[in-house]
Length: 253
Image 1 (cartoon, rainbow, N blue to C red):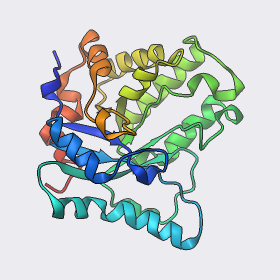
Image 2 (image 1 turned 90 degrees about the vertical axis):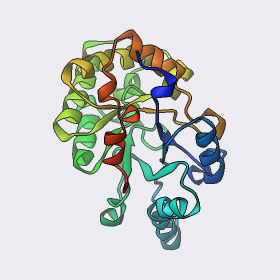
Image 3 (image 1 turned 90 degrees about the horizontal axis):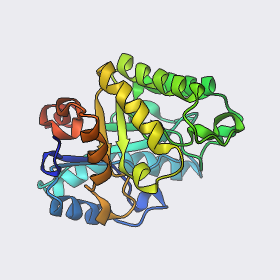
């Protein structure tokens, strides 16, 4: 049984740096401390747009976040991270590799999945897998790939999800159980997450928990994720958030 007290980290948090979230870094740290967390990962989106100065600022904001937070306090260890989008042109990648927690996933606001096939989306993941620590919310937008509006768990969707789980294991990439997906309860998302999570259990994958918080008061809330994990009896020793040794692999501690 995985309990709330077992969760040491929230590994998917957005600040006002994402431009569609609502809380500052300071507010996120304070709420994480109030929730009893020891680690958080700040995973603002990397937009890679605008002027040259904007691009330089965007990169430096990610790179120095962890160091600045460490100088200011020590109750919560902040992992400097970012959430990238598949198919995205990532500039200055050598510097961005320094980030402690790098996530990548499908975001409808940044990629029109209707224009691509399942194989296309898989190849996007494959191209970046060696550079990433985590695949975020792989169940999202899946029913819209190829121009469909599919809510059922079709054979194509099963094969696609299994291929990503297999790729993650081969590349030592963590798979995320996203609380926001479960809270939003979009048609088909729960079934897809339940399916890939059961496969990941038998496949030996590591997983992480992310609130995908866009407002600081939701940091560390994993009620629905814990219900699902306990329902399928997922091994606690393969959940990054519950294991200090695994967490330390992504930090400088």
